[in-house]
Length: 255
Image (cartoon, rainbow, N blue to C red; front, side):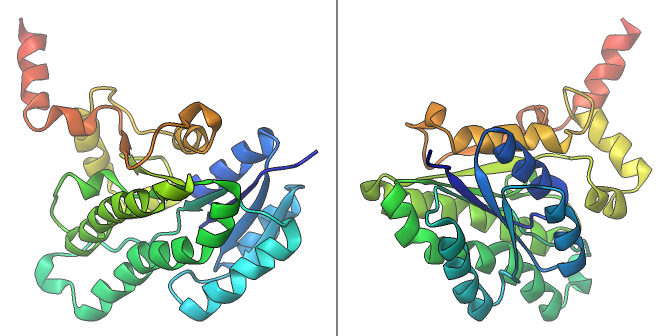
């Protein structure tokens, strides 16, 4: 029996870990890529069918070594999930060049480097690629000049990749999560900000990591065989509503 192989970056925690587990449940084998050695080894030890590979996706030399390791172990690659990302929220004036480049290096350069390295294997399998952006890619906000711009670039890079790789049967899509209950979100969002999000989201809650993973794995499946070049916002309707929802809710409650 041939087991399909997924490569998930940023796989040691959060959305990446949830996606890894869901691929395993669907009978795939998974290369787990992360730069946090201790956390990667700890979680991979509990997940048969995985290959943990230490790699910082922002460093070209490490990506160049990582991909052959995966192919040597598994022999094929059917899906690449570019999930690794970093966030630092600062006012524009406080966002120095070092901060800007740190965020771009992982969030954008990492996607480019891993995509380019995976192309030969994905051509062979006529596989799929899913890039993880953010609702910040399509909704501007304060404190996100670097983060939001990096994720907006990922959305366009997804379209470029889909256009160039479609001839080879490779599908490339993007998932743009809204607020998600992760440790990262808890670290950077105050309770007041979280409440403000809920006021603006029709479903009035954050997603959980499993809900994001379900869409990612779907896009890599045959059920999405004619879907490419798309960005799917998994955001509880956040992008659909724009501004004004809290005021409208208050008015409705008074009726």
